[in-house]
Length: 115
Image (tube, rainbow, N blue to C red; front, side, top):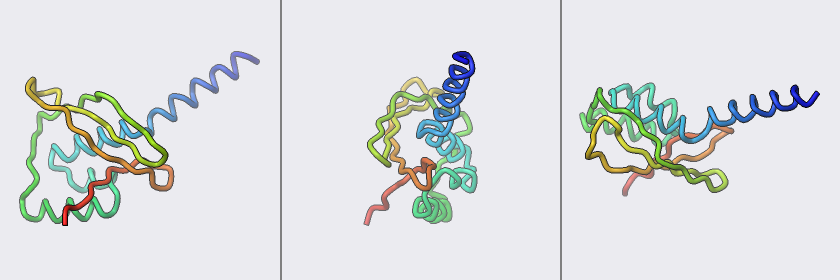
């Protein structure tokens, strides 16, 4: 009986971890770096998706096919999270932060547009 509970607990933890903010940040960043805007939008809020459409329409998105996401840390407070990462393909890459919000149980990238 204890083995079944243990296996269930481990399975639950692995499933929970796979849908966390780190995974959403990684999928968003890697797709965006490769110029796959429509794929990146799957990991973004609706307003962030519109901002991506607007920016890519003007050619404002830089494509970097060598980009490799390296997770540094995350911070989660209620339905908001911040993931710190850097581009592992560049030695001189600086750490960057990305904000996420939880919408209907899913972590999505949220970028505030500057007015």
